[in-house]
Image (cartoon, rainbow, N blue to C red; front, top):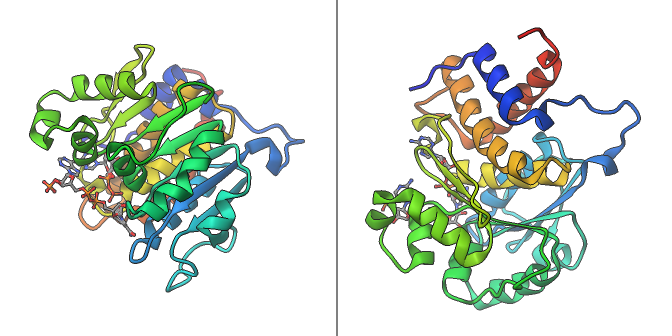
Length: 289
Ligand SMILES: NC(=O)C1=CN([C@@H]2O[C@H](COP(=O)(O)OP(=O)(O)OC[C@H]3O[C@@H](n4cnc5c(N)ncnc54)[C@H](OP(=O)(O)O)[C@@H]3O)[C@@H](O)[C@H]2O)[C@@H](O)CC1
Ligand SMILES: Nc1ncnc2c1ncn2[C@@H]1O[C@H](COP(=O)(O)OP(=O)(O)O)[C@@H](O)[C@H]1O
């Protein structure tokens, strides 16, 4: 397990993700940092969409809307700052980045809900149920026109998309990520230990941060929301995606260093750690190397 070290993290972030280390302009307002809309949360899985939305908020975007297929959720366990409504209403609105699929059952109704959003969105992050609909060819993606399209499959979802097996994906993770990015003309984060990030234009990075504390329900939802958040803030696409994966992993290391993991780490604890890390990076970015 990689131990958390503030100085190593600071140097790494400054080298690879300078945009996330920039202080905010004093005259900024919530519109400066973009709006994320999350659509997901079918019956029994509302927590997934709420986790993604909460991660987007703690990740620093200006406004977060969350549309739940099962609305209202059985227990109101989310942040009051979130603008929560039913999925149909939220999907009719507008947002800078759409995070689709967290906790969404792959039904015809869900496909009908997401298809118009996919057609008109400038920036999309597809996770979980949205990826499974894509695998079933129930979710058409436009050939061109989208500024950013990110797919965040775990090995099971990647296997469905590739019509392959989890073993085959795990045996050649770089190939799987590249193949998916080329087929769908998308950025791909193939999740799991040492997530692989690939783009259709040839970008490739293997992320080394994180620990087995992340092997817990909902941590992937947090990642999807965080990617949406950094994209909405206007951070360069390559940095927004790779930095999200890295920060997500470093947050798990930071929590483990405080004996809040890896055992029993909760996905819902990651957003606060991510917020601390990002503010720490910003406040120490100018320090002499
Ligand atoms: N609080 C909530 O509301 C939560 C709701 N959630 C929502 O639940 C929905 C279903 O999502 P899901 O991922 O649980 O099921 P599914 O897509 O069938 O994947 C299982 C298959 O993938 C494989 N596999 C996965 N990871 C792997 C790895 N690293 N390495 C290797 N294999 C791996 C796995 O392999 P196995 O474990 O069998 O070895 C199995 O074959 C989804 O909408 C999600 O958002 C969750 O986010 C939790 C919190
Ligand atoms: N052993 C591990 N080491 C590092 N990262 C891990 C490990 N296990 C899981 N993760 C990360 O945790 C997240 C799990 O996502 P996912 O499988 O989609 O879970 P969920 O659907 O419950 O949200 C991914 O970002 C993955 O890379």
